[in-house]
Image 1: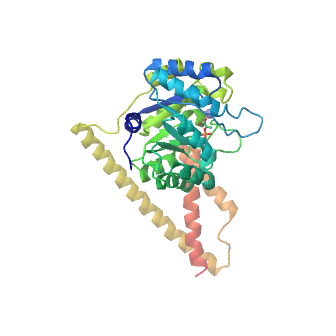
Image 2: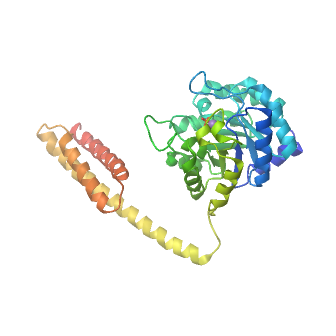
Image 3: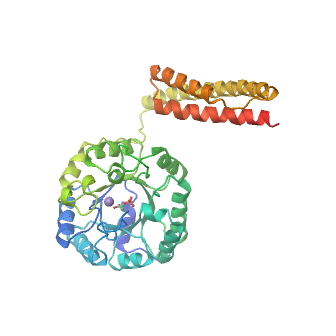
Length: 361
Ligand code: PEP
Ligand code: MN
C-alpha cells in the first residue's frame, strides 16, 4: 500500500528500537513551552520522540481540556527545530485529520478512548489508507479483551506500525499508585503479541515523581520495549498532571540511572546455569500440581460426606480459619500476605467447584 516518505520510514524504523524513549509535556500549553521543552529534550540526547497532549480528556469538566488544534503548528515547529518526531493523542476522526494535516508522526489512543469501541472504530475509519504508527494505551479498566479489541480495530484499518502503552488501571481508594500497574496484564499482552512493542508509561501509573524511577526500572526488568514519560520545563506549574512531570534534565538523570538489562546473552555458562535452575522450577511446579490434585481429591471426599449428611459446601468460619492459618504460615516462609490470600482464594474456589460437582451429581 504505497511507499513511505523518508520521514515515515525513519519513524517506522525508530519504533522498532528498544528501548524507545518518548517524552514531552502532558499538555501543550504555549508556543514557548512546547519549543523550550523540545529543545531541552533534544539536548538530553536520550529522547526519540516528543509527545504532547493537544486535546485532553479530563475526568472532570472545568479543568484544562487542552489547547486544541492551535497547538499543532507549535509541535510542527518544534519538530522542525529539533528533528524530534512528534506524537499526540487522538480521540475523534476530526482530531486524526487535524493531527495528520500538521504532520504528526505518531498517534496514540488514550485510556479513556480504548474503553469505548465506538470511539476506537471512528479513529480506525479515519485512518483507512493512511500510513502512520498508532500506539494503543490500555483501557482504564483491567479488561484485556478491550485492549486487544482496540488494537484489532486499528490493525484492521490497515495500520501496520502498532504499539501498546501500559499506563496502569483505575482503582478505587488510595493506593501508592494513581493507576494500579497490574503488571500481569501487560505481561499477558506481551505473551500474546510478542512482535508488538510494549511501552511503559510510569507517569500515569505513578501520578507522582518520587516513584517514577522504580516503575521505569521494573518495566525494563520485565523486558518492556520502551518508556513514555511526561516532562515539562516547569513541572510544578504544568496546566495538567503537575505532580508527575519532571524536567528534561531530571529525565536525563533518571534514564542514566536505569539499568538496561538484556533479555539474553550468548554465554554458555550463563545458559547452562539458567537451564539447571529452570529444570528445578519445572520439577517444583510438577510437585505443586501433584499436591494440588491430591488436595482436590480430599475435597471431593469431604463433598461426598457433606452430601450424605445434607451439609452446605461452605462453612465461613472454617474458610476464615484456613486462610488465617495459611497467611501466618506463609509469613514465616517469606510469602506475602497478598500472595497467600490470592493463592488460597484460587485453591479454595477450585475445591468448591470439585465439591459442587460431587454434591450435585
Ligand atoms: C496522557 O498521556 O496525557 C493521558 C491522558 O494519558 P491516559 O490516556 O493514559 O490517561
Ligand atoms: Mn498526562
